Amino acid sequence: MERIPILRMGDFLIISIQVDMHDRMAMTLQDDLTNKIIQTGAHGVLIDISTLDMVDSFIGRMINIIASMSRILDAETVVVGMQPAVAITLVELGLTLSGVRTALDVEKGMELLRAATRSRRAEAEEREDGSVEE
Amino acid sequence: MEVSKSDALEIRVSDDVVLVRQAVRKWAIELGFSLVDQTKIITAASELARNTIDYGEGGTVRLESLIDGFRKGLRLIFLDNGPGIADIELALTDGYTSGKGLGLGLSGARRLMSDFRIESRVGDGTRVEITRWK
Ligand SMILES: Nc1ncnc2c1ncn2[C@@H]1O[C@H](COP(=O)(O)OP(=O)(O)O)[C@@H](O)[C@H]1O
Ligand SMILES: [Mg+2]
Image (cartoon, rainbow over all chains, first blue to last red; front, side):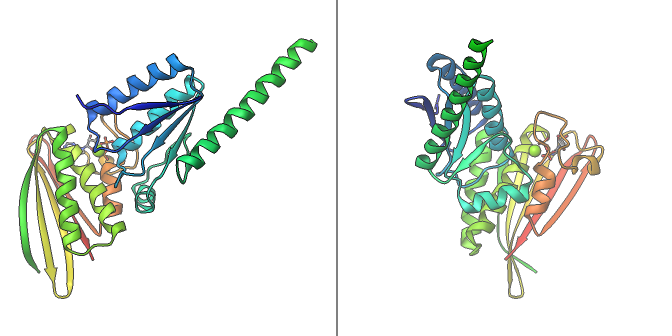
């Protein structure tokens, strides 16, 4: 069966959705991604949809599920490369990507993830410092 | 108004949704729709094709290129002999789903197109007709 590859880049995972996905592939992707996040301890997931010529509520729902799953596993999700026509259509369809940040391209998406990870790490360190003082 | 070209496609399995999208894209390009309009029509078609499978037990879509004076349009008619819809107004409410969807397919398709008609009878099936004029 066709599978969507999940690439690892440092602390982050990158998924490039390039094909017309059908239900089974979407389900497999969710499972594969969960396993990969746990396996690698990744702190960010980058979903590249630059080659998608449309996003319907099926794909939108899948992105939302990926984002909420990732959040539970302590990883941020960024969607990159959404084509303008797709973005315009999404608004009219009434679909909002909840808890998902968007960026223009992979590079900007990585920057976003790095910044998010940094600030999270800083917060965690602050918390640890606090507990030492107590 | 004249139908200058027409064709019908089966919608039985998830892969057929992909084929419907590809056909609709081709016809929309042929009619000279802008990229944004193409994307809107394809997204609406994707939603209704999926409904035909998920709720209508499969069916067909009829594609029609329309000429009305100087106007050109694309009409899509989704037909199934499934269980039908008891409460159409409820089904057209943003966020209503009887399954696991986002409940944006029917309402979203209505927003994305120039014209939206739905007829359904319980035990008989559902017919959704959408048209986009250029
Ligand atoms: N072809 C159909 N046959 C029977 N019921 C349908 C059909 N299309 C839509 N429905 C009903 O309308 C509801 C709303 O559809 P839709 O707006 O596409 O949302 P979703 O697909 O997310 O449920 C569906 O949950 C279903 O109950
Ligand atoms: Mg639907």
